[in-house]
Length: 167
Image (cartoon, rainbow, N blue to C red; front, side):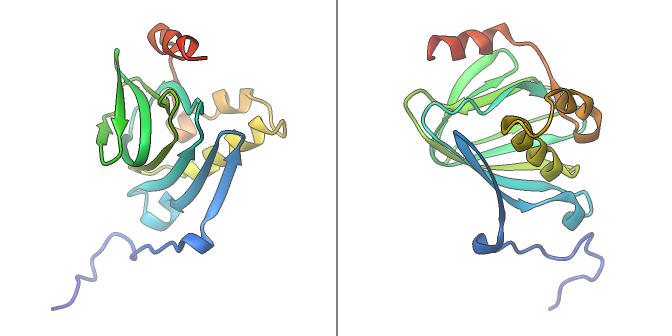
């Protein structure tokens, strides 16, 4: 029995040794599959966070669902108005329009697989973040790219307070 030839995209295989990585002082992102290879079906990358890594500020997506799978360690997440900790083996799906944020849990490292569906060329967004953190691009480019990458920053006093309490 063979596979249907009506698949929306070709199978995607990304070898660890061939995957592009983006790094900042507290995390390394391994880029696995982006929408250009999946007919906009999904984007996936893996992030390893050092102890104290701040991850992503509060934001939401208007089109994409963001999936989190914690491979090892612990990840603190904001979902709506609740903060919780995901541990190794935990899975979280955040639907569109739901404010969320994440960081390594206090005193912990975290290794997390992220998947967005639909994908939206998010690797370019991750690369932009790296350039901004290295001083090679202006932070206003992130705000200007909100629609393109479906990444909309929101204010969360709860998340700010949680980060300040562990700083």
